[in-house]
Length: 216
Image (cartoon, rainbow, N blue to C red):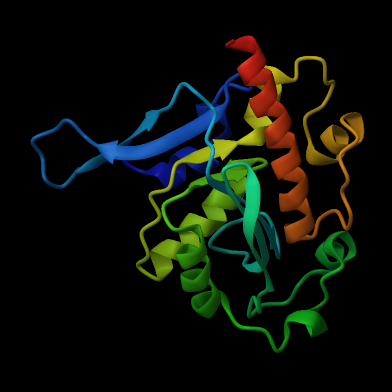
């Protein structure tokens, strides 16, 4: 796949009934200028991973900027580390975004920018699989900013939104608010990155269990 970022942001590229689960691998090609491709992994289960969530000033990567990163690192089923920071987006946070996230311009005014934060986050995730709810959105922002800093992110990516559509057939909706309520998952401070990441981890654990039950 020539441009993974383009793939992420094109809604038509993935059927709603498919889960999102990709990794970068060596391409079987003699051309040196295309050394990698993305291939689909059939099993949506990983034991060690990082669940993350971003809050942003808007919906368009490259135009809008990241204002918060929240993440939990899970090793052998247990949370072993956390990453939680506000980010100075160097642009105005619209009122409607502040109203949703409860992140104000004053709160981020003295924080580090993404140029300082992203290398720290990349170090935190290492080569672990990444999990996000609606990963297309979060990965598009992550990869856009990584490219600006000439940082390469090759981690496998799983999307609990698509996984939920595949394994939670009983659910009428698959947004995080609905799923946490349906499965009685605690979600404090919704639309704050760290707390959304915690809730997404619980959703993923439920999906893992359903997958194991189906494939016994």
